[in-house]
Length: 251
Image (cartoon, rainbow, N blue to C red; front, side):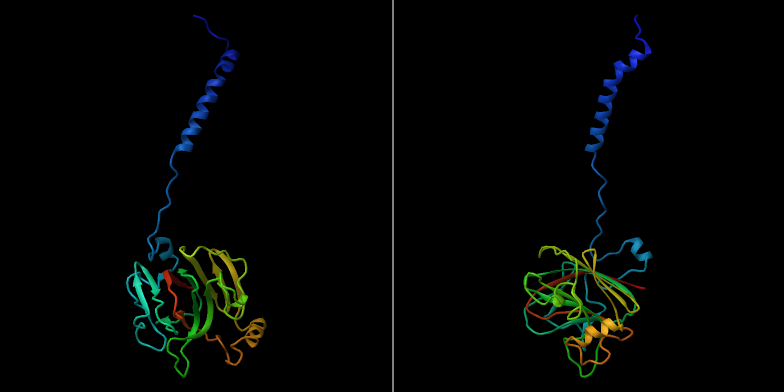
């Protein structure tokens, strides 16, 4: 029996070792990647619960919500359908709903989608002042708007309505849900849209009050400076808007 010298043996088997390594690498590439666990809508993960999150919409009822200046949800305007809280869009005029609770420092997250031409919004620090104006609510507004329609920058998607435009936002198609997030720490307020911070301001600051003075709210004393308020989902009528995964944690 003939034996190859050690130095020749290594050289002789090098191509075989290379082929084996390539085969193993190819097999690894063909293995399916671990699939991300999909969380059903309107549910919380254990981590979210531990972080203090809670649902404001259970996906089945309108519990915890009512019409502005009303005891119940406005009939024939809002409905829960397939795990979504939605406006029917069949009638004109305001018919917004608010949380029964009020909040001060908080983080709010929700998903929404709109049909073409829709106009809606998420208001916060909403107060029900006198005289009553059913269907409406006075407060700061995270604008929901169909940006395919032209409008002033401070009245378009994710803007602080009539006060500050949203910068750096990325829109999704009509059939896709967008993510809105509000982070309120004392007087510091941030609007987030699809993972990007697009608005930041400080309530009560000189810059904020200058904006108010140049807006439609100029004649409302102490506009949106209440220490706490309701969260409002706006229905201006005429278009459908869908909301889900509405959750909040207090900061």
